[in-house]
Image (cartoon, rainbow, N blue to C red; front, top):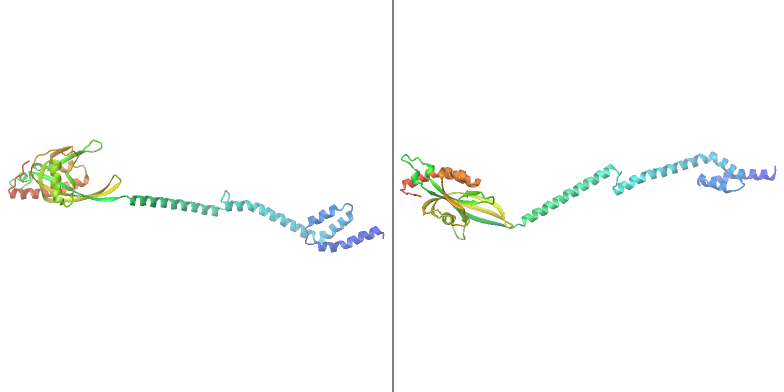
Length: 290
């Protein structure tokens, strides 16, 4: 055996031991090391032949696993970023939860805005006002015939007319504010005289209405007491600057003249009680000509 053959045999016998020491290193490094040795083709062949049986399968399996892991990481990374950042292509459950959060925040903002509006409305100043007025009646006794039948067309009621913003003439009962220390009946008699020129005397109370309105940023709760008055004396006049017209209206046309529903309701009450008071006026011998 020549020296070259002995050297070649020596390298071939030693290569399995070197391979066992390099078991943990990847095959790629072993191949590159072998290729960098210029003339050692026999040594490279020996190393590749010795490792192909015991480590070739394991090395190729490791490389496939590394490639698979890298491929998996590359595929998962965009989905992971989109899920974290909430961008397009993210998890549907994550986008659904994000939508729910946005809806919750929008609902919360609307609730806060509603509460702020309610707080502003609750800060509006409120005030209570009280007024009184009524219907002054003429011709009660004269409307009763011999059989005590009452003809409402012969009873007259004094009403006032005011122009609204559209220029329409609206009819209503005379009324006004109750002065400090004044009774509502006294207020009714005073307001009837001031707005119609007729002196009247309260017979009974017709009813009370109340309503809310806003004037110059103040929310006002107004209560109005209405009375039924008998004519005493006086003549109709419209000297009050707030009154456009004053007129005697037949009692049977009273309901249709009123512009406001609450006063029409009081007019129906008056229709029901007028016959009773007309008979009382006749029995008392009172005459109330206009």
